[in-house]
Length: 218
Image: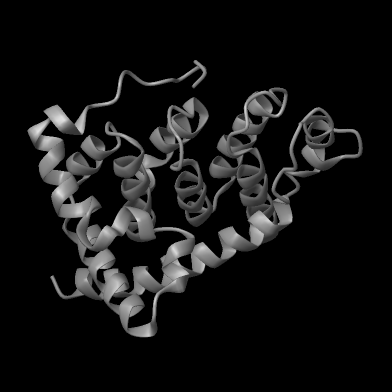
């Protein structure tokens, strides 16, 4: 992956890091959580989904900020799972870290999870982080990362904030059109990505209700 401003130090290796191994065992791999977070969760049966939501809410309730910080130092599985746990618990203190990790794009598969988390925070600050990503990566058609997903997330935030962050990116012959022109393969439609983000945010809301009941009962 490319080096960009804000890129973090080398990832911790789960194979040689007992602390990270323990956190992966407790929070990342149970019931294949890291694989199911995202589109796969919508293919679960109602019974499976209910159990998955309950266990995810419990994990978001149990994990500490320090433990989340360790997961964010791991690989894509750990970072993806940590981002979802942050979204469920609405731990907005992780906003800047997630923005840096998204911009750094150090590994695959976690970018969409960062987008869901920023979408759930749902503020102008989150829209600015997404815009910063697009400013850096839309001029780079050689890097096929999360451009469409980020743009779809920004469309989602524009809708809920009543803002127009996407206008300059989607203008005719603007950054998005120029990025598409020089690509060798088709890209995802940002409006389809917007719908996917909305669906995932609804799942976060569903899980957050269970999380809130745990917090109230503590």
